[in-house]
Amino acid sequence: MAPLFGGFTGKTVLEVGADLSGNLLRVVEQRFSPREIVGINLTATNQNISSRARLEQGDIRSTSYADQTFDLIISVSAFEHITGLERALMEMHRILKPGGYVFSHFGPIWSTSYGHHLSTRYGMRNYTYWNVMLPPYCHLLMSAREIERLLVGRGYAPDLARAMSEYVTSSKDQNQLFFEDYEQLFKRSPFDIVLFKGYDVPEIAQRYNAEITPALLDQLKARFPGKTHFFYDGIATLLRKR
Image (cartoon, rainbow, N blue to C red; front, side, top):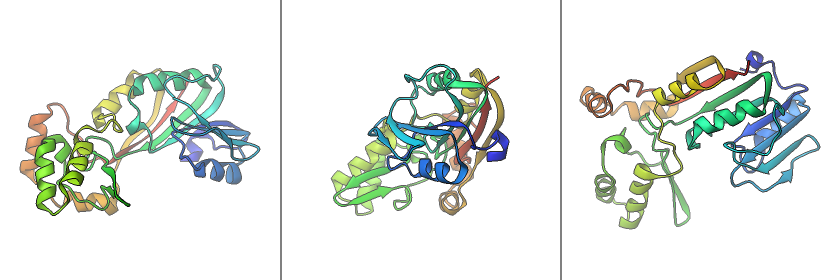
C-alpha cells in the first residue's frame, strides 16, 4: 500500500490510535526513515521512542497541532473505536498538508458477524471474539439478556456471562458504525477518496460464516433497511487532501 501514498521516507507522519508500546512507530522509524513520526492515543503516556519517533497522549478529534503539520497520517485498527469520526476526519484534514494522505486499515466493524469486538477480562484471562464463539450478528439481533442466558447455558459463570453480554451489546469501545455509514462519512468529508474497500479476515471469518443462513440474512435486512454489506469484516481506505 505504501507506493500509493508515496512511502514514508523524509515525511512527517502521524499514527492515529498508536499501540501503547509504540511498536509500529519503531518499525516505520527503523525501516522507512521518516523525518519524524508521532503516535497518539487517548491513554498513552508521553514518551520518546527514538530521536525521530515519539508517543503522545492525544485525541484525534481535537489536537493541538498546527495547521498543515503532517505529510501523512496512518491508522491501524482504530477507526472502529472513534466516536465522532466525522469530527476526527475534519481534524485530520486540518493538520494534514495539501497533497497529503490518510491511510487507514481497520476492523472488525460493527456490521460484521463478530463486530461486537468482544474483549472482556475476567480473573486472569481475556475473553475475546477469537476464543469465545458467539452466534454471528448476535450483537445486532439479540438482547443482552438473551446472550447472557446463552452463555450461562454453555457453562460460563453468571457474572462473566453478564459482563460479556453487556460488552457485546453496549460497549462504548465501538462506535457502532455500519459499512455503509463509513462509506457516507468518507464521501461527506473534505478528502478525495483514492481507495475505499471492504475486506475479510479468512482465518476467523470462515468460522463465523459457517453458521450464517439465508434466514439470518433476511433477519438482518429486515432489522436494518438499506444495509447490505454484512460480510465485510473491515475496511481499508486511502484519502487525499487536495
